Image 1 (cartoon, helix red, strand yellow):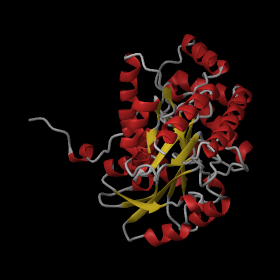
Image 2 (image 1 turned 135 degrees about the vertical axis):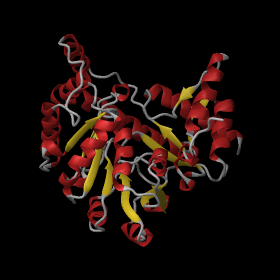
Image 3 (image 1 turned 180 degrees about the horizontal axis):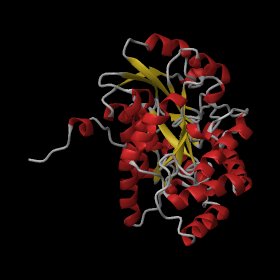
Image 4 (image 1 turned 45 degrees about the horizontal axis):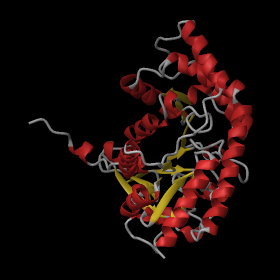
Length: 382
């Protein structure tokens, strides 16, 4: 009888999808649902990006490219990083692929032998641990504290090191908290001497302080970034990895095997994003910031104050432990009774239990309505 492998069995499902599917069923029955569960920009992909893709397709840019990506695109990415962060990036150290998820998985396959360990924060984005497990590795979680602003403590990471530790996986600004790691934290983490995979997909969506890339602090970084969030291109599936020079040849072989290359015309869209779409995306960023401030203030007014301050992305992790220790059950109850879809904190690890993640990647009118409904729900519970 055909069955899935043990690796597949180790993958934990997204509870957010369960909430979303239940929300869709309620909508099919005529219920009004406010969607605050998913982290997908509600803004359209800027016109210059779409126009560039259309022109590229009309010019027959629909074939395989170099497996590392178009050289002109990799040069544009390198230039973007130099202009924004002041770091020198060799285009030969840039790998373009179809989204950061496949690149994160490739990083795990590249670095890990079976039984090797990767340190992750808790809470953290659910897929990271799945990526580790799929490569035969073991995720090791370092707890974060709301009281400490959900900052990763380098001393706690150091204490979690074992002879089997092969890498540290970080995300800043983070999903699900929206917290950006402080520069001094990044500097201390770099001193650990480990390869560090740094997911910087929410760069561009930082609202307080200068954005800092891990590339400023270490030459052992594998930095993941892409066009889904800041450039509102989730469905385009376009991302890249900046990596140490020594990894170029094995990474190229791996990418040739699993992906061949990123889509040709989509890379032209990426070049247009860097060259012509940033002014429009900055208006998106300003609106996210307005929503962030509104969410922080409104949560406090309805008795759900945040115990920390999110600086980036478009998430707030709301502590609801005084109401329930089962975030999935509470999220489903809120959905059924209040018509608001939220992500249960347990999706992000044991440290997320007792929290609900609210995404403000939605219009401020919908956010306001959702918070009004949440206010009524929690007031009814006393």
